[in-house]
Length: 105
Image (tube, rainbow, N blue to C red; front, side, top):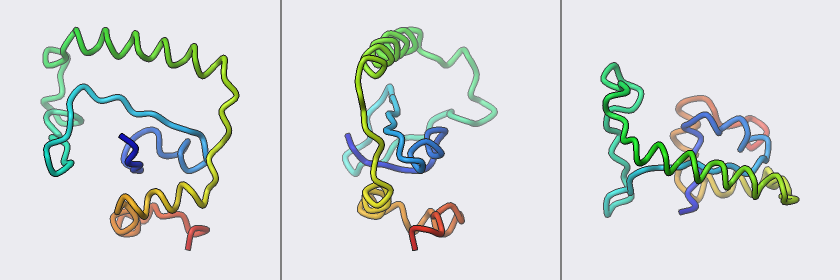
């Protein structure tokens, strides 16, 4: 799914035009909304982690690192990043959070 957003640790890289990828262990609902669950709350403790998901993410991450290291992946055009975020409807929330880059105005 290609729906960019700035709400994670990948944002500084995406803003700089570095291609990013975010792994999820669940799918959004029919409206495209993700269930936040326990993530980044006081209840976000190790006992809630699914070992199978962790193992699969680790394996996938290792394979991705190998592929990226062997590839010549170009940086993203800043205008394309801006346009993709706007098309995904992220611009309004980013402006409200004061994280929409001034140079994109």
